Image 1 (cartoon, rainbow, N blue to C red):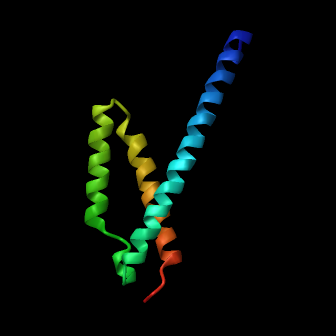
Image 2: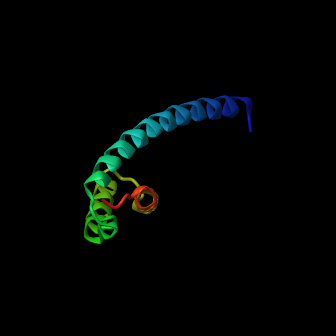
Length: 96
């Protein structure tokens, strides 16, 4: 790699790190909302809403296509986000 490319790579990585920091802040906010949602659920079976998951993934696909983002990337990301929060809700569910 040329010195010029190394410098460019370093700048790109700095920008990626800044975006990662923004994503962490958004995940924090999302987690707080999920906590509130979880507090409203009375039964453990309410944690997974397959219909809502299908709608979310369909919307993400449509938005991805509109913004010219590879929908396989966003689908994979959102499936993992959903799985992570389902796991979080199961671990933190307290039967009332």
